[in-house]
Image (tube, rainbow, N blue to C red; front, side, top):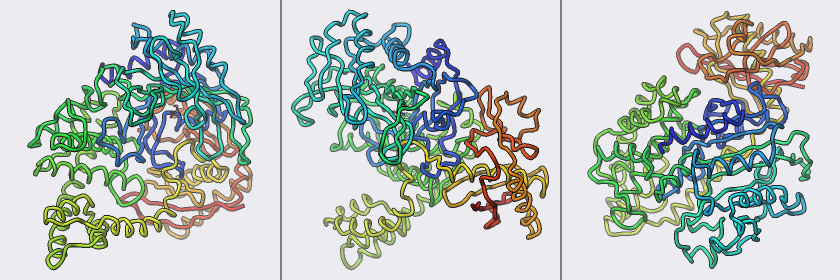
Amino acid sequence: MTLSELRQKYLDFFKSKGHEIIPSASLIPENDPTALFAMAGMFPLVPYLLGQPHPMGARLASSQKCIRTGDIEEVGDNRHLTFFEMLGNWSLGDYFKPEAISWSFEFMISPEWLGLNPNRLYVTVFEGDENSPRDEESIAIWQAQFEVKGIVAAVGVAGRDEPVRGNDGPRIYTYPKEKNWWGPAGQTGPCGPDTEMFYDTGKEHDQSYGPVCHPNCDCGRFIEIWNDVFMQYEKKADGSYVPLAQKNVDTGMGLERTAAMLAGVPTVFDIQDFQVIIGAIEDKAKLKYSKSVDGFDSEAEQANRSFRIIADHIRAATFIIGDQRGVVPSNVGQGYVVRRLIRRAVREGKRLGISDLFLAHVALVVIGLYGGYYSELETNRQRIVDEISKEEEKFAKTIEKGLKEFERMSREHMISGAEAFILFSTYGFPLELTQELVQEAGAELDVVSFQEEFKKHQELSRAASAGAFKGGLADHSEETTRLHTATHLLHQALRQVLGEHVAQKGSNITAERLRFDFSHGQKMTPEEIKKVEDIVNDVIKRDLPVTREEMTVDEAKAAGAIGLFEQKYGEKVSVYTVEGFSKEICGGPHVTHAGELGSFKILKEEAVSSGVRRIKANIGI
Ligand code: SER
């Protein structure tokens, strides 16, 4: 089954169970200062999980583009990916555990759908602690499912770390919070117990991972395919767990991983789609990818690692640059991530003996594979190719400069860890490259002193980027909500003062300020800035009510709502109206009265690029 076929099967299944299929949201979260990228399917749904009605209803399903950068160094092994798709179905206060679990079971084992062997299925549930009891309800539902299939032994429940006994033993395992709970790590918000589904690959247990094998063992015998989260609590700032009025279901199934398991191949890189991408790299490389090889030592293993890194990184870079809110390589935020992905791919290409520019060729293959479902990749094809090629060319030169600098440094003595750090920080020269060069000269690089230098600098930058990689729920603090409403007021005021050509080109909110990019040809005069501020402050003073309605995109257009019409919307959208002032398509959240903003001030007005201006502004009490 190709990724497209599996994705379609999943969406069709949930459609048959009364779900509306929603398009993937952008990879780049809007108005969420706590995360660089969408990391799970539920990410764009946070306001709705917290109780706001979703315009498409209470049963939703999607395939969401996700990026997790935490594992970037692990990519190259047999399962880590930076970009992946998460299949998910949601109940927003509609169905709960019985339907969620029985549908998961049906989709996995019914021959009409995935047709997995139920004898190889293992599930885990929450074992209970002082905050929440053992999840007896999920246990009973799973027992009934297994029983219907005649797998009677499976109904037994095993404690954590009890060895798996195959056909004679229990299939339901309980684990503590670290394994069977999902929600904001250390943060407040909706959360709850989850039940995870694992498939037994039948692989022999590897004793180096522990004496006994069990579903959560990391030896690779069991593959996690799906996670059903039951959001029934809200974690409060004081650490308490309060039952939620609206109970939600949030499920997540990794598309690539499930495809690998269905195909019975040992790694995600062996699935058909990845093989096509790897084939595009082979076109340009002096080496070949060897399917059966999986390790890190031999030359073939090293080459496989390079192929995998390039395939993963260029797939991710294509999706980030080609996103509906695409980002290009730079030195900050998401832009830095794309830069890093492309540079690592260049470096790995060198290892494979590739001397020409080759990344655009790989990116085009990625667009070919995915452009059917993610049409933004087709729309942004040129930008993807241009940006990837530009960065590739630039870095290829950097590597050359770095090499010269390395030769200069090493003319008199073997270079030190501190010098290796200068090569790294000033010339963008990867550590492992320096290491190799030093080794070729018959010496060893002092990696410890390099790392000390690295840590010193990292500590400085960590404070600035704290929170940027935090997982879990977005921070929809009150301040962010107020700034979000202020953004709408600013947008409309700009249109009144500068003209109807003003359209949103970007928006970003941190707890300290809002930032709004819009189309306009020249610098704003002080009078224009003052006028815009006065209009917004007048709306705040009049305390105009902010209301929300649901309608189709056409109705929204007819009602004069502004919005990013090139963006994909579902069939129905939310429209926020500031009474008598503005109307805009938007996912929210917003305050209910303009007066809650207190006051409004523009801090800065500047150019971003030709024809695009940027305003930074803040609100007061
Ligand atoms: N939020 C859960 C996860 O990321 C289920 O979608 O695993």
